[in-house]
Length: 149
Image (tube, rainbow, N blue to C red; front, side):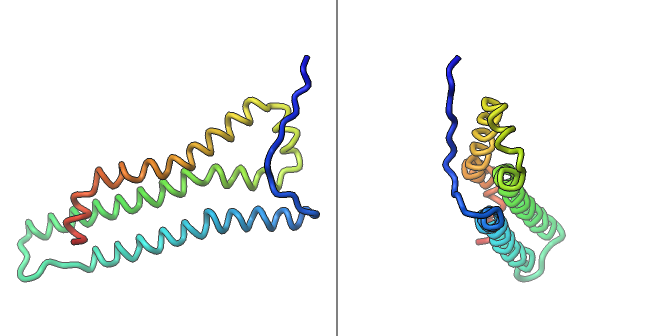
């Protein structure tokens, strides 16, 4: 039987309190703050989109088409924000779990293959958010261009 050492690259601080401050700061600055900024920016875009009205007299059909495009853009914005939140949530929850659970190291070493697979999966999920967004935009881009231009 071979003795295998497993290493993790992480920040080490002198006290549990500073460790928790560090991990909560990282989650706040890399997840919560970007989520709020994304939400705020897209909310501003939606506000502009829904304020926009057609010039002159608008027929009922034109009004219906305009509202349909606005709803598609709203749906796209909702999907983009939710995808960001859902793709990055597991990574951040894992970070907090690792920082706050005193049994984490025991769980990690006793189920090393499963733990490693889980960590790789949640990292791939978080980074895949950047891959998914262009596809979301591609499916709804026509309505987005018509209303915003």
